[in-house]
Amino acid sequence: MVEKRLVNVPEQINGIVKCMNPKCITNHEAIPTKFHVINDSKITLKCCYCEKNTDIEHMQLVK
Image 1 (cartoon, rainbow, N blue to C red):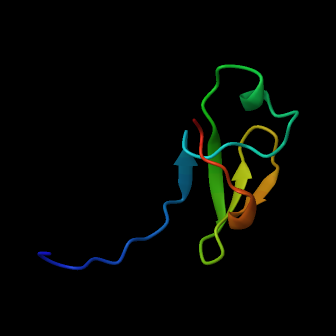
Image 2 (tube, rainbow, N blue to C red):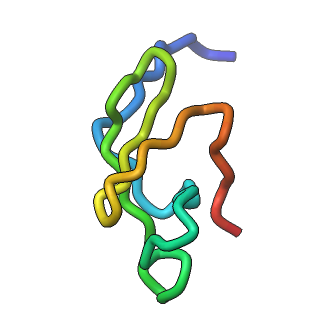
Image 3 (cartoon, rainbow, N blue to C red):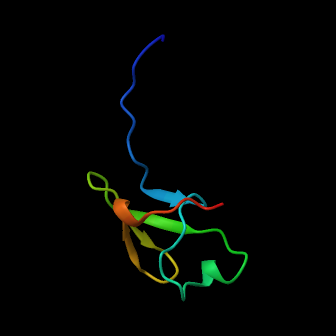
């Protein structure tokens, strides 16, 4: 290890997490997911397309 760094959560997360709303367009079309980070301490994301909030307990990675 060379050095330790503190990692911050970005303001926007794209193409990594699946939207939990089954009616969201990202679950039916070939559109990459896009989320705004609402809370970076408890990690809560808001989908830019359907505006559904997803917390860290319900997040799934995109396959």
